[in-house]
Every structure is written in C-alpha cells, then in structure tokens.
Length: 219
Image (cartoon, rainbow, N blue to C red; front, top):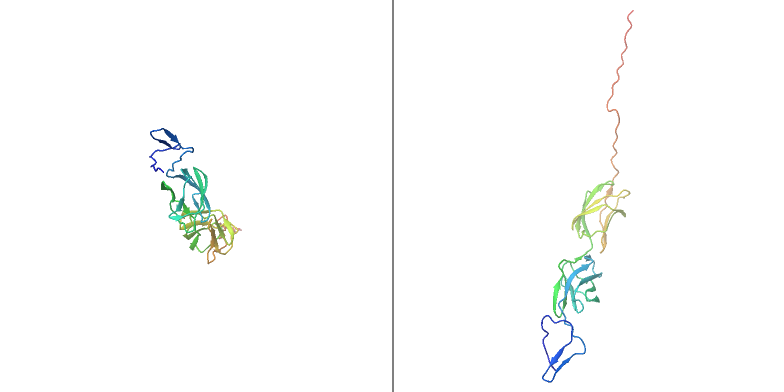
C-alpha cells in the first residue's frame, strides 16, 4: 500500500508509479475532485418544496447544498455543469451554498423564498371602479393576482415588499380584498365597500336673459 498527495493542478489521467525496475500506470483514469462553482440558478425565487436548477462547474461530486444555512436533500445530478434540488422546508431568503470534499462556494445572489402574503390594512376603505387602493402588509413582492370579492384586477404595482397599489376593477363588488402569490392566498378580514361613481351634470348655456319690452302707442 502506498499513499500519495494529489498535487495542485492535477487533471484527469493515469496514475504512474516508477521504481528502479520500471514504470507502471493505472488501468483507469484518476479524476481529481475540484471545488464547485455556481454561475446561475433558475428560478431566482420560489416556495419551499419546489425544484430549482443550479448551473456551474465541478458539480459532479457535490455532497451538500444549503439554502441560507438550511440543508437540502434529494440532489439530482444532470451533468457536471447542472444539478437540480428542492428548496428545503425551513429555508429563508439568502445565499445558496454547494460543497464537496474539495471545498464550498456560495451563490453571488440571494435565492428569494416566497412566503405567504399578509394584509394588515388598506386605504381608502371605500371607492368606486378606477379608484387606487393601497394595501399594507408583508410578503407582497411576488403577488400574482389581486381580487375584490373575487373579481380580479390586472392593474397593481409594487411600492415595496410591504406595500401594494391596486386599481379597483370595473364590475367589482363590495367584499374582501384577496391577494395571491406562489405560496398561498389570503383575504382581508373586513370588506372593501364599492361605491357608485359620482355623477357630473352640465348644461349649456350657463346663463341666459330674457327681455320683454312693450312699447305704448301714442295716440
């Protein structure tokens, strides 16, 4: 038995041993394990339990993947440059770390774990179709749908992860406001009241005068 240290920079190839009699080579190639690297991952956000794909190099011998410190299981290797893994339950937004016996590396960008949305309040409390309503809460960054008593609106925009602006759709009814993302759906505990639009009347002309003059006859 002979033990030797693999020198830095070793590539795939035969192992040769030389003594005073001669040189012998291994029948199989030796493949050094190199530290992994992550170049990208898709999707860049998702819910716990969903599969994501990691792209990079030296992924063949990856033995451990962590999402912001939480270990994932069920690693599926597609190639030396790509593997798939499920987001573990308990994971939170943060770096993805991959490791093998040669070393470990973290992703440059955070993987965003999508959590169920929360609505704490909304203003105003009533309005007609076309009115803008501001929702305040948490986990509002990745909202897919907003409804007023089940009627969807296609017009909403994000102020921040805790504030969403929504336009009341035509046909909306008085009822709870609902928001949906990939993780879950939630509705407000109080109703939003749909009011009738204000009517505006006009007339022309805006003023008029009538003059009647009777001229007496002089006889």
